[in-house]
Image (cartoon, rainbow, N blue to C red; front, side, top):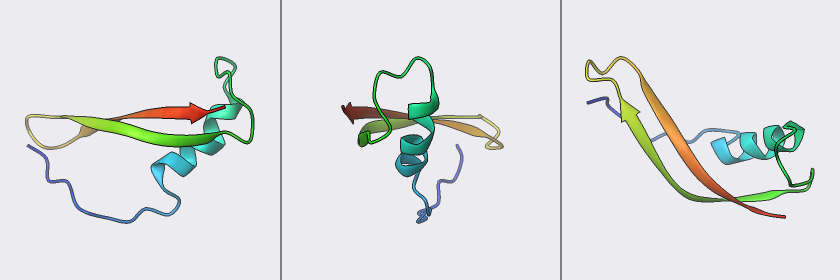
Length: 61
């Protein structure tokens, strides 16, 4: 199991998504989209070397 450290990221992951999502052709929102984080989960490498975090967000279009 990986060690997950408590950290403050600037910009946050949701803020990065707010900039990235409007540029995706499959996204139905607009440039002024506000995202809310609904939840998240993480898949960890059994050796603890890598992990993939998945964010579930809602868009207030």
